[in-house]
Amino acid sequence: AVGLQIAIDGPASAGKSTVAKLVAKQLHYTYCDTGAMYRSITWAAMQHGLRLTDEVAVVALLDKSTIRFEPGEVEQRVFFNETEVTAAIRQPDVTNNVSTIAALGGVRQKLVQLQHQIAAVGNIVMDGRDIGTAVLPNAEVKIFLVASVSERATRRYKENLTKGINTPLAVLKQEIELRDKKDSTRKISPLVQAKDAVLVDTTSLNIDQVVARIIRIVQEKE
Ligand code: C5P
Image 1 (cartoon, rainbow, N blue to C red):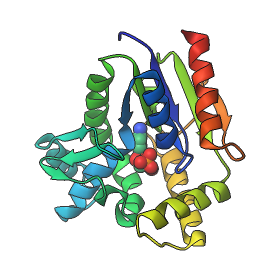
Image 2 (cartoon, rainbow, N blue to C red):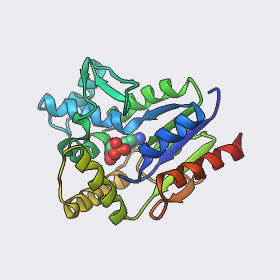
Image 3 (tube, rainbow, N blue to C red):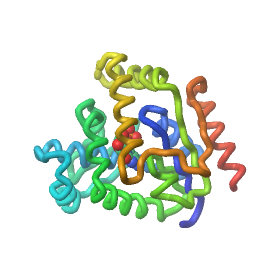
Image 4 (cartoon, rainbow, N blue to C red):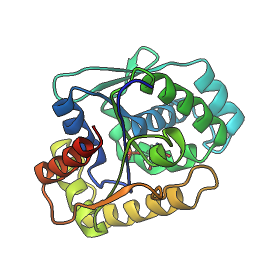
C-alpha cells in the first residue's frame, strides 16, 4: 500500500472510533470503521429473520449486498444496500448480537476483503479487533487501546444518553464484559494485542491526550 497504515484495536467502548476519527482528520487520512461493517450485516441478518449462527444464509445475504460509507456532518454515514443504517447499527439489540455474526469465518473473509480494498488507497486509519493481527499485519503503526471496564461502561452510558438509549450502567458493564469475552475467545481472528502493538491505557486520559499520544507515535514512524 502507499502511505502509512494505522491499526487501532481494542475491547468494546475503549474509544477506538472516537480517537481513530480524530487521528484521521488531523493527518488527512481515510478512516475505516470495521465494527460498522460487522454491525451492518448483523442488522440485516436480524431484519431478514435469519438464524445468526446460520453461516450459509448470512454469507449468502452478504454476497448479494453492499456496505458503504459516506462522509456525514457529525459522523460517517453507513449504508447497507440503499438503506441508511447509521443509527440502527448502534441500537442495543444489534450491539448484543454482533459478536455472534463476527465469529462466522465466511463473514470475516468477505469483510476483510472489503477492508483490504479500502486500505489499498493508503494513508488509512482502521479500527476494529483484528486489524493489527489479521487485516493489516504490516501496518506501520499498531495501537492497542484499553481502559478499565468501569470507565468504558461509564463512557458508553454517557454516549447512549445522547442517542436516547438508557440501558442501566450495571447492565452495560455486563454486556461489555460478555462481548469482550466472545470476541477474545472466538476461533478466527480473536481480539488480542498484536506483538508489535503499542498498548495505550486510556482510563485516566482524555480524548485529546490519547489523540496526541497516537500522533506522536505516528510521527516517529514518518
Ligand atoms: O467496534 P465495534 O463495537 O463497533 O464492533 C462491534 C463488534 O464487531 C465487535 O464486538 C466484534 O464482535 C466485531 N468486530 C470484529 N472485528 C473487527 C471489528 C469489529 O470482530 N475488526
